[in-house]
Every structure is written in C-alpha cells, then in structure tokens.
Image (cartoon, rainbow, N blue to C red; front, top):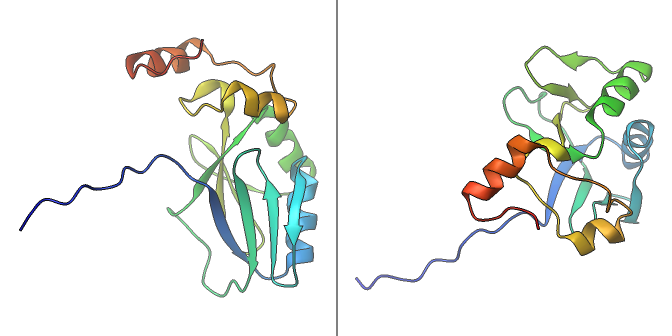
Length: 150
C-alpha cells in the first residue's frame, strides 16, 4: 500500500465546552474573565480569544471531569486566582491552578509568560496585549525548538 502524506496538526481553532445553560455560562465566565462575545444563539455562545475561540454549547449531561481538562492561557494568572476566590469558586488541589465550572468542565489556568504557546505579535496587538512577554524558561523552550520570539 502506498504511503499517504499525512496532514500536520498545527494548533487549535477552538475548544467546545458543554454547559447546562448559555446565559448562566456567560454569567459565570464573565465573573472570572474579561472577554468579548463573538456570537451566540439559543444553544451556543462563542467567546473570542483573538485568533481562537471558546465555544459554549448547551447540553452537558455527563459527570464532572477529573483528568480531562483544557489549559486556558491568560495574561495574569494571579488575577485569576484572586477572582476565583472572590467569586467563591473552589480550586482543585493540584500543583496547578485548576477549577471546575458549574457543569463539571475542568479548566487549568496557564500564564502566557510561562509557556511555549505564543500568539503572533499582530494578534497580541489586535487583542490589546502587545505588552505581554515570555519569561526566561519559556524563551529557552522556544529557542530549543527554533521558535523564540524576536
């Protein structure tokens, strides 16, 4: 059988979370994060993340997530920690900053400065986040892969 050229996965366009109610989900996430609503319907809402988005879809019925989660990159991880506490949202005991939303979706908060994930300068500028930078550890990781920011 001839070898078929495979596509290379290059990133995420969006993550979809199932929630019980769109209005409640927007209110919950709106208490925690500053975001722009890209669009919505009766059964879905789309939170803009620059060149990506978070889709909230009505219909969550399964139990809460334990290991399954997604890492949400933020400009200020400590601000999220304080906002979670102020909103009465319990964090999950772990070496990371994790919580579950009211529907059991597990979210890990990741600071932009501390990881190899990088948005293009023009995307950051368009998001009003051109001031963000990487710490030394993240720059080393990116440099080792030939992807260090200029």
